[in-house]
Length: 235
Image (tube, rainbow, N blue to C red; front, side):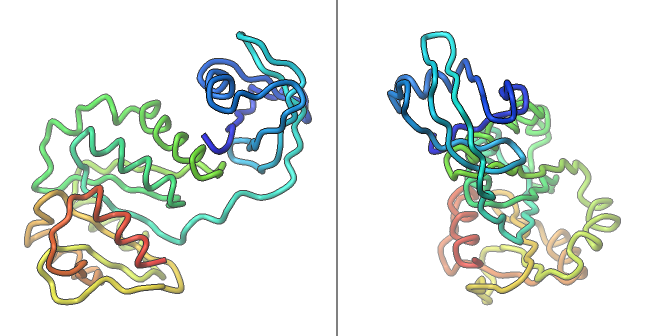
């Protein structure tokens, strides 16, 4: 945890905060902070700064807080991701949050198992847990937006055209000749399929909307490996 992420309920006053539970245990066991020590803190949805510990015991920690700088800018990137296996989903959400992606659309696809949509990892609480862990890792405070779209065709026809307007639209697909561009200057919408890729109908639909199929070369990567590789090339 590189940043202690505060929520509004933690704020006793505008300049004083109190934490308990998981974050307190982390401070005690990892940071080993005591009275007078300073921690990097940030207010969820707000600014980043420092917290000077004024009281700490096994039940709570209080600190004087000074929030004096903005969080890092998010990437100008929307990731449209075919819903992966539940265990992979948790890791991917965490990675996307760490990398600064601020809009994630989880969409159905032909190769997505129907049972994936029933996972408890898709509850708002479970999603937010992974996103928050990513913010704490990367010293960020701005929670990504996650949208769930269980019907591919209506989403592609009714919502996606407006979503991609003004952006470079790419679909990662194994086996195509064009490679993913590097160091893009401007907004990007990146569609990533399930293991095995999008089926031909889905690719055709995305191409008809203006998406450009790209790959990372001859190797076929797992989704959780492909996404960091793609994002690092794009930005």
